Image 1 (tube, chains in turn green, orange):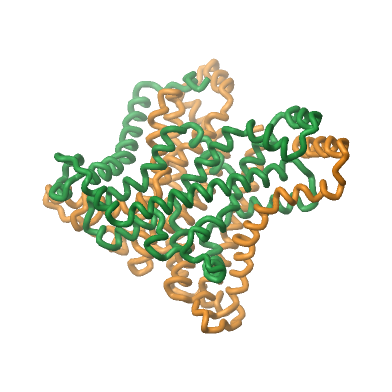
Image 2 (image 1 turned 30 degrees about the vertical axis):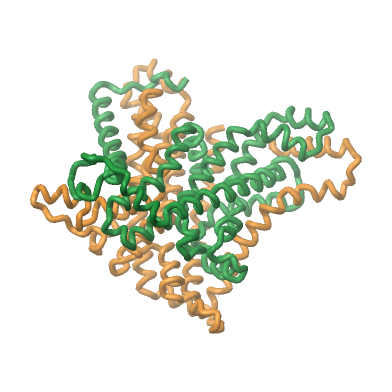
Length: 277
Length: 313
C-alpha cells in the first residue's frame, strides 16, 4: 500500500529533492566513513587527507584492546543484558496489571508512570549519588543496573499493546480456567512478540549508549562502560592518537548498528512511539 | 471507554470463577505492580522529594560537614547568579536555533521521502543512522573532525593554505558547534516522526483533490502541511525536551560548559553547581526550578497528545 505514489512531484521538484537528500546523506555518512577509515589507518597515514587507508591495518584496534577496552565492552555488555532483561520483565508485569484490572489508585499510579517518563536522570542525580554511596553500591554493576529497572516507557508501550489485544483472547483463556499469570504467560506475551522485541531493542540501544548514569555512579577504570571508556580515552592519551580513538568510536557504535540492520523496521517503529508517547 | 469495559468484563469472569478468595484477588494487581512501583518510587520519586528538601539547605557534599537550613536563600542565590543567567540565555538560544533546523527543515525532507514511497527506503535508513550512535561517540568523532591540531577538517583546509580555528575553544562559536553536532544527531529522528504523521493522511482526500485538478504543489500546501499540524506541534515539543536534556552529553564531552559559560544550559548548570562547585543547595534549587519547567512542557505535551489521538481516530 505504501508504494502507491499518490504525490509524485514534477521533474524539477524531484531533482531538487534528490539533490537536497543527496547532500543530507553525504553530511550524515561522511563523518562516519571518515571515522571508520581512520580507525584502519596506520600511524603514518593518520595525518593524510585521504579518507581511506592506503595500507589498512588492525593495529589501532589491537592498541585499544591492549588497554582497557575489553573490560569496558564486558561491562557494557553484561550490564545491558541484565538491566534490559529486568526492565522488560518488570514492565510486562506492571503493564499487565494496568491493562487487565480495575483497582483502587490505578489512575493515580498510571499518572505517575506518565510523569516519570518526563524525569531524566539529571533531575534526580544529587540524592541518587548520595543513596548509591550509602547503599555501598558505588562503582558496582548493581548501581548500573538496579536503579534503572523501572522503565516507564516500557510500561506505557506494553499497556497500549495489551489494551489493543482482542478481548476474545483473554475471555477464551478465562473459560479454559487459566489464572491471570497463565493467561499472561501463554496468551498475552506470545501475542505481543513484536512489541516486546521492539522494546528490547530500544532499551538495549538506550542502555548501551548511556553516558550520564555511568558517569554518576562509577569511578574506577574496571567499572567503566564503553561510552565512558572512549570519553576517558579522549582525555588521556587518546586525545592525540586519533587512530586508536577512532577505533574506539567504531567499536562503541558497531553493536547498535548491527542490531539495527538486523531488525530495522521494528526499531524504527518503536522509536516513533517513543517520540509520540 | 473500551479499556474500562474490557477490565470490567475480565473482572466479572474472574469473579465468576470463584475458588480464590476475593481478598487475594483484590491484592493481585498490586502484586504485579510491586517491583515496578518499588523501583520507581525509590529511585525516581523519592529522590525528587529529597531534592526539594536539599534545596532549602546549604551543604558542600562533604559527609563530615552537617547541612544547614537556609530557607529560600539557595533559590535567590541561583536566580541572581551569572551562571543561571548564562544557562537560561543559552538554553533559549539552543531552542530558538533548534526550531528552523530540527522542526522546520525535516518537513520538506519527510514529504519528499514519503512521496517516493517504497523507493525512499534508503534515504529513510541513512537519515536515521545518527540516532543510533551515542552522543559520546558522535562528540568524540567531531572533536577529531574539528580539531585545529591535526583534525581532519584542519588538514583539508591546510592544503588550501587556510588555518583552522578552534571552534570549540572560542566563546563565539562553541555553542553553534554543539548545536550543529546535536542537529547532525537528532535530525533523522524528527524526519521519522513526520513520516509517521504522513502515513496517517487519508489518501482518498488526495485523490479527490487530484480529480478536482489540483497540482502537486497545491496538494502539499493545502492538504499535506495542514494535516501535518499535530505532528509539527508534537515534533516541536519533543525537540524542546530533547534539546534541553540531551545536549548534556556533548556539552560535558566537548566544552564542560565553557568557554566562559558560553555553552552551558539549564541541565548542565545543575551538574556544575553540584559536582563542580560542590554547592548542593544551589544544585538542588536549580533542579527544582528546572523540574517545574520540565513538568510545564510535559503537561502541554500530554494535552496535545490527547488531542492528537482524537484527530487520528
